[in-house]
Length: 407
Image (cartoon, rainbow, N blue to C red):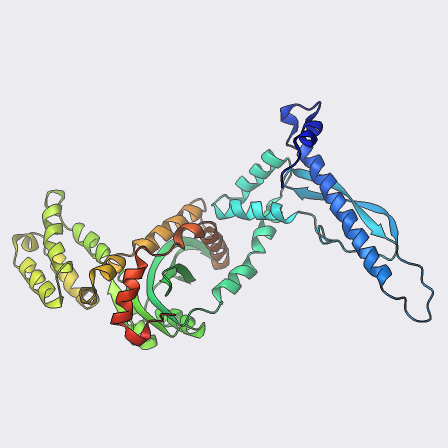
């Protein structure tokens, strides 16, 4: 709905352009006028509903009616506004627009949460709110608004999940968290899943100082308790204890190491002048037609001058071999998708951007709150459907037969 131009002209009459916004600007006046008009309409509806009800039998009670107003100062996007809240004689009116104990319009809270999600500190939010809206927002108020998100975070962490996920990428970021008076560096493990329809979703966040089979058993048990019955492929980057834990929880799941991470690790041992030659030699391994051809390519590399010059490279591939060779069973469409954990690394980069401004967090919950808000703020980017999923889906339907949910 558009507003008549003549009305806008009359509103602007005699006002300078700078009078539009700010504490005493026209926007503040319009907010007050519209809010009070809406409150008045709410009161009329309330009184009409009460009058429509029959009076209790045997009582001669006069109908409820207006009884003046009381003032309330509320915080809005354009600053503080003093509203005249209508009252009724029976004190039964409780407006929906701004409830009895509410002092801020919901949109104001959402703006604070949005700034927090983008990595702004409490002090930065406080300064921004005061500069833009002319409103003093205490650190305790900002914390109270953002802490209200924790119920949502808890519900999200415990929500039911899909019975089957074709692919789950697992990776971690590091955050500093204060505990017992000391700051420790904790890993926050993130699980990014590809759903049967090709869209993506973050299944949860798990905090741990050190990874291991016991920790991963707890994570996978959590997924099972929330409804996950099967994971077709789990793509990880050398997570300690993960293969053993997933074999116990999801025995049919194929664990695939990230080929790109393995290559990067190998390149760390090679001098700059030899990196192209090393990369070309290793490419013959992971692009082989099958496991036998890959085994032959690795054996040839082990006998080469490059392997003798950099003796740590070949053993690193041998150690990860059981998690490398499943990759060779897949057709090109699937290989392109699970070749790397870049999908979850891109997601983690957005999380790191949000947590970078924090020196440390006072608790796991405080870190989870910010990460959850950062995920929500960027969900339109990372939730997009996987490219060429239709081709991958067809291959999954053939490879995993009745395990892959086509519906």
